[in-house]
Image (cartoon, rainbow, N blue to C red; front, side, top):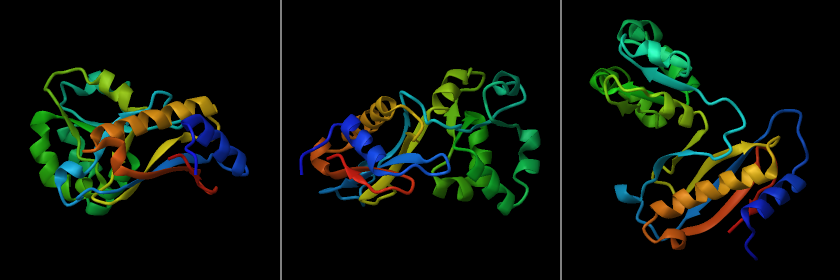
Length: 212
């Protein structure tokens, strides 16, 4: 089967998938090969800023001291200070709900031990451990980047998925996002593209189209 360029694959998957009555997402499925996934170096855990964005809101939460909180209120979707931590994450059920509603977290470095102790068992399995920030720094550029980012995470499995955007985005934008994700994955693998068995794209409920 001949390979398709990212744009050809996106155009085909859109042509093959009838429109739905909701805002469909597009995603890529990547199948790895010839890797010992028991080795940490072969596990992929990356945040990738999509050049054309996600096509829908991405929520960023920040664990901040009282001093930093005013700097991030205009850009972060959720600001958690030590004073509000107990109220927002009162029970394990409430903690899971809050964590599930936010895509990415940042935290001032001195707060990381407290976050790990209180929320490590909730955030860790979901791949949402906060990215540490230097005390007093301005995280606005990082927050803006995360608002168009996706998480690549294979969790020791040969097949993993990542969102590319939404169906209402121009095909050229979706293709650019796909190329950016593939470039990042290839760059992380020991033998690059030789460690990729196949790549597919699909809409939420449509058939898949093979790229590689």
